[in-house]
Image (cartoon, rainbow, N blue to C red):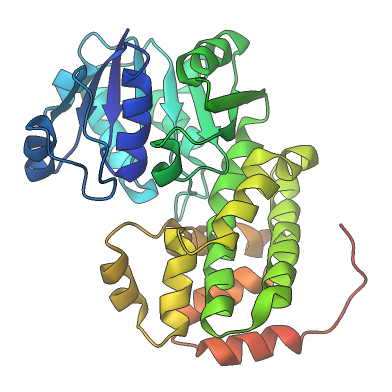
Length: 332
């Protein structure tokens, strides 16, 4: 089928290539005209060397061209960029085909997950077309066809079946899930905990420290997710604990790497510039606190990450602050 893919970052290129490998015609939109030109000419993606585009992939800066005749729309845009891009989509057409969300974030000021932003733009009728993919997956590994499994969630079982069939390969498995918001929450909030784990590694605090951050971080995520109507078991699955293990456990993750660089003495802006990709956890930690405070839900790890990034709190002092908190009974 014809697939319109919005976004051509590492993850976008990787999944677009996966879809093209299944004989789909994939037209990828990007606002970066230089990147589109280079990829169309057969040059490698700057973040995925050794894996050029397939013949049935085309890159364009014309959004209408990517959308024209598409039987599925997939997005791989930043959280901050989602609303403006899909507002432009609405000015061109109102989709009547599956829309697959792969971005992981929560919009600032509104507190909406990406599927909810899409519903806010198009209205409730779009829900039957919406699906989301989230789980432990690195573009650098998926593009090499290393075994990977993710959660896929949709409001409509028929849409979920179409999406699972489109993305599943011998190396990439999609497990269906009906908890759209839970899948979105887990994928978004774990990025901030990954920054904390990167800071821990940058300070040389050891594996025990990282394990504690991951466990207590998942507890923070679960509390906020449950208060927002998500299912607890979703946070124990691929889009929760699974994605947490991957993103927090390796400096391949841009969020962990960002935290590591900050702990090593870089300013947040210097670290972002060195990484050359969007650090979603730095954006989402703001959203998480905006949601949690009215609900009086404590998120101490997320709050310390926020203070390090936006208030200049030295990472070592943040660790000291966490360790001096009053100990309460462990409720999971």
